[in-house]
Figure 1 (spheres, rainbow, N blue to C red):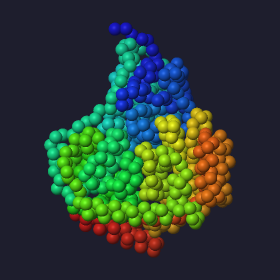
Figure 2: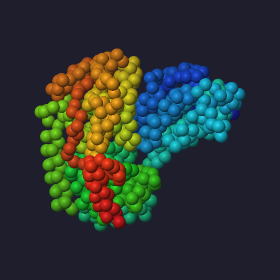
Figure 3: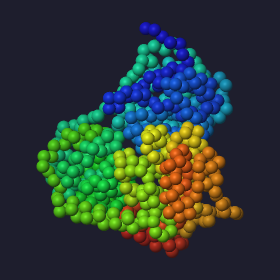
Figure 4: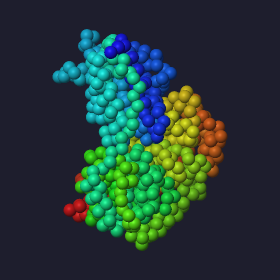
Length: 611
């Protein structure tokens, strides 16, 4: 057996460059590249190794460690988990800056390889710069923060350990059930140490994402449950997108007349115009979708983890309904006492044999009529008349952009408005990070989406609060020459949480700028700021000017920022259902006391349902 003498970092990067994936018959590199911000914990070891592989494993420079990982995560999400990025940082703050992003990937079940530098394995120069010292455990470093937010974690303290660690990492990144972030903490002295690696370790590897079939007895029980149901409804989650099961779900729902609704992650796998699509479900749901699950006798949850926004804090569904869940991960398939069918969504749906079964046609026709009434409410909410609001901005954008454009958003009020009223025309056109609801994801995420689908228009929607949290990747986007349009909706503070604060009886406090502790209220000029980062930027005075600015941006190309002021108070009042946000049980405020009384009524109603 022949060997190659390489440093650990050289061996690691050479291995990554040889990992490929078969996507529908086309073999491409699994890693699209490496996002890197170098420091003393990775520049000499991993930096030198990446420099030698810049053609086969390109390295991209970012401006913030969390943001570059967000870009990597958004790329993987838009690529349906079939390709990924690696991200490397120095030790200390560079590493811990990525922990939030690791949590985003963990919650959303998305693949990203995190390569933070670590302390010296030899401990010879301890404590090195930026090292966290634990008074009671000499093995602890800052990178231990990654353990609870990684699907697989390893600390490389000897160069030969990557012979086992890297294949394990790849198996997690490409496993449909276990998929999530992998952290390999790279001790900085070990990165530079040499070892004689087997040449076979660097042979090209072609991976394929497995499609797990379900157990035959589970399938039979699921078929029986559907046959016994008169009013079944489907909840489509992100697993439908990752399994590329949209077309199969379309045929299944159409053939058997079963209505369907969408989670945030599942929105867009079926076009908004599909006759069986009732739209968004849950706290941010449509009247039609929420009516369906309140009345259904069978809820078929496909590829969803059934979080509280989907279930209306576990109080939305008909308490007498049976829940059946199709999911590759048993942890998700068995929630809420569901009949769990563990398997790939596409494979399971294709294997279901329901003959000429049809859902109750009278029931489904009534739901279709409710959906038409809902569409009329949306049309009224997004019209161009009146003062600018989030719904009217969304309406203007829908009227202006291409049918196959992609919209990107994350936290704040936008996810609620967009889940209810955004009309997805083309698959993959709705990219929402609402698993972790992470402020600051938006702009970096838009960059990742643009890298995944450079031929489609990408629009980032971000509030002024999130913009101020993380905007540095505007400069990265300009530097990379991508095409990206960023819409900044300025309601002068954290408007969404301000609304939640007042809805639960509180006074406006510390959310809007005017309600915060201040000596001078800042007059923030987002246009000048974006221009300073290299983008073309302008402010729209009203909805008509906004549409004109978006039209001009489409023609101009490059990175564009369009700013528009909106009302702080109103969101989309239509649709939705109750969300469990605990109100103080004791307060001197009459408003809080009244809000608590309403809260107790809602809570008792849910307890009665689930008793």
